[in-house]
Image 1 (cartoon, rainbow, N blue to C red):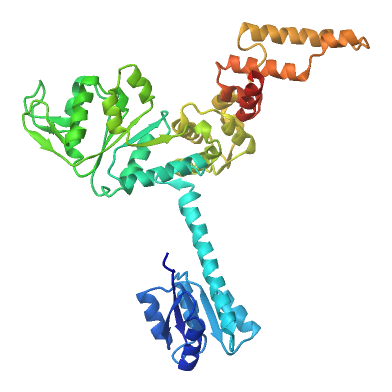
Image 2 (cartoon, helix red, strand yellow):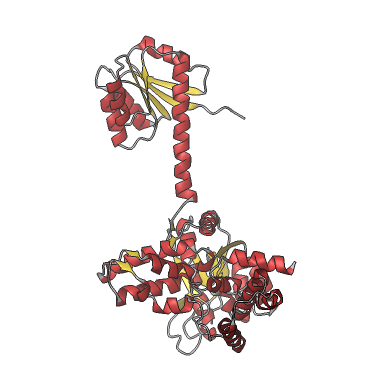
Length: 477
């Protein structure tokens, strides 16, 4: 593997010293460019920014400190190591405050120069790694998405990877998770960004009009076709065609769409001439496509044509830590739009939002926050402003739910009323049940009441869903 060399700019007006420093670095992984004046240094940096700069403070045309200050003001991130024969603590402090990475006092050894340079380059590499992490791995926002959870970081990376390709993207996720936002991000990051993004909702258009919406029609093709019309396929030429709710498409039209994907050509309704277009396909569905294939509502061959790059958007209940990031951002945006003073959530209100299961996902959260902002005002959202959410999230009151639950509650209440202290061990054995037995009965009863939904039962029991999963597995094993 070839050795990587670092580009170093040496700014030193004494040729003999410059040759000495170059000699110190000759055997290392460095390519050293040398200039003698400040103006020459600025010109060299403008032409090509070096990985590190060795800068003498005393130059014939300007002071090195002036160069340092100017470079940092312009945003140059390369480490700058100051070299001076006029070493003093005050000079060192001034240079470090101005943005120098380190400080060398003449004369210095080859070892001292190498160690200082290596440390500066390693530190710069670490800074760049951290910045890469923040930009690529620890992102709180991404092309309209909000959320820094690991699940969303994976989504962001998938979108970036998919965007560079021309392959078809198949987006899945529950309603309200941001499938159209995902399609827009894929298009904006692709090479087709200058072309159109044409969305068409397969569930919102009547079946007898869908073919015309996608492929267009010629004049007189059917009653009401008074002029030729360009369909979504033609409009998306050179860009992206987004087919939302693809599993809602009529099976007959699915076969025509399959031919269009395979050939890149289509015929308008009522026409006879094939038209060729260059289109990238992105589709989405909130259904399970494999179930739709099994039930013969969706063509298997079309699925495999479309399902090239899958992107799954997780529901909001699976990324609880993102709830407050989204809620706070929405709260401030809506407050600014409505002229309200909201800026944050009270801790009690935050707890309610975190515990809610959000079956409508981000769309439901958006509606909830907008409702709060329109109907209320204040510096912080309080639990009293969340009556519907509190009611849905709260533990059912005694007597609610099934008849069995009410009977169990009444029996328990009666037992509490009739309880009397006793020293009879047999009597105590009858009245007191093992905690593990009581816990198992409570957990299994809660899961049953919630229709087998472990996550929902966890909310009502006030424990983590992982705890219930673990206990159920242990009991069943």
